[in-house]
Image (cartoon, rainbow, N blue to C red):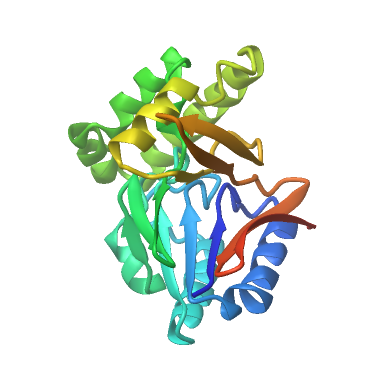
Length: 240
C-alpha cells in the first residue's frame, strides 16, 4: 500500500498559491495513494465547523471527492485548527485521528503526531496548550459566537507570532528526551510529525535499537510530502 503524509499547510485565503499547490497535490499524487494523512495545522486558523468560509467549503469538497475515488483520508488536530469537529469530518468524508496515533504502514507500527506536544521546553506554549485543550475550554470556545471566536483567534495568532520571533530556536523545537519517551511508550521505531517547520529525517537510538524521526515540512516557500510504500519512505519538496 502507498501512504501520503502532509502537515502545516496553514491554508488561508491570503495564500492562494498554497491552495493551488494543495489541489495539484491531491489530483496528481494523493489519488495514486491508498491513504492520505494530514497531521495538523491544515488551516492557518479554524474557528469552528460553523464558519461559512469559502476556502473551507472548497477544501471539504475536494477531500470528499478524493474519498469518493477510494482514497482514505485522515486528519489530526494541530495547534491552529484544533476546533475541527465532526461536522467537517462528515462533510469531507475523513476520519479524525487522536494525537498521538499508531498506524500500521505495510506491517510496521508507526507513531503519528502533530508534534507540538513534544516541545516541552517551551513552557509558555505548553501552558497555553493545556488551557486551550481543556474540555471545559473547548466547550466554552465552541459555544461562543463566531464573531467572538474571530476576535480571540486574531489575538492568539498575533501573540503567537510575536512570541515565536522572540524565542530561541532550540526552545521551539522538540525535546529529544520526550521523543524517545513517547516512542518507547508506544513501542515504535518510527515517528512522523510536523509542527516545527524543520523538515528532515533524523536517525536515533532508543534502548540500543535504531529508530527514525521524520519531520514534515510547512508549506510556505515549498510544498512537502512524505510518501511511504513497500520501497521505503521518501520526504520530498516541490515548488509552490
